Every structure is written in structure tokens, then in C-alpha cells.
Image (cartoon, rainbow, N blue to C red):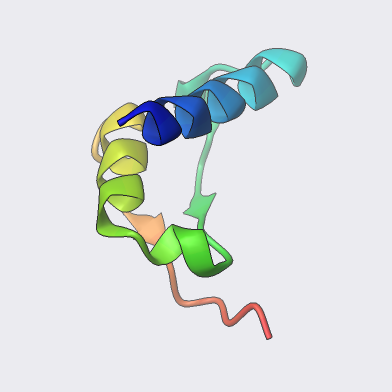
Amino acid sequence: MDLFNECMKTVESCLTDSKMDKSSVDDVVLVGGSSRIPKVQEILSNFFNGKDLCKSINPD
């Protein structure tokens, strides 16, 4: 669970650095291998208040 917490710290840091609140995020776009991990998807969706995640972008 520590790795998942570290992922969320990065997300929170990005929001803080950009002076944004999570409610101002319109879309959450997942790209890359780690974004396919169901637990990562669950944590991000919960963090963004149940927002649907965009997972259809092919990183190749």
C-alpha cells in the first residue's frame, strides 16, 4: 500500500504546485503501464470523487 500512497502524494503535489483544487480537474487521463493497475484506477477515481477515468489513449 505504500507505493499507492506515494502515487497519491505525487498527484497531490502536482495539484498544489499548479495551485489547483481537485474539483477544478475536468478530466483524469491515464497513460502508461502503471495506469492499468486496477488499484491505481480505484484510488484515483475515489480521490477525484468518483470521476470516470479516461483510459482509452494508447501511449504508443
